[in-house]
Image (cartoon, rainbow, N blue to C red; front, side, top):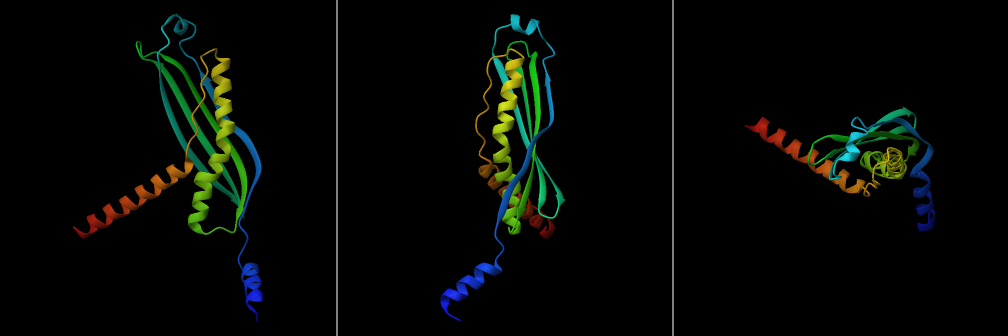
Length: 167
């Protein structure tokens, strides 16, 4: 077998990596402005609280639902009154195959949420705008950095657990 034939044979044996978007949709949305209209009589010095998380559900062979959960709560610094609470669950169904375990974890917790984020960001912005509050444009999120932080926390917890069993 020549080198060229060996390379072709190896390529045929290795499964091709596949990541395809099947569908992107809003799974849940909530916007509350409990202190309207009197909140507009106060000086606008907002304090923004932002939470972000993801959920993954395996739907079938090579089929996954990834849900990006965003929660934004804005209060006024002086009074502490809640201006608005906006919660969005932006989801998508993805076909993913041909990946090793670590690659799959990265795909589900970084690449898929990265694809969903622009949709969620636009939805949050539109909801805040419809509440007649000043524009809110969420900053981009580095999901790769969040994935690395997650891996580091897992490694640290594993080390701590190992140290505790030795003691």
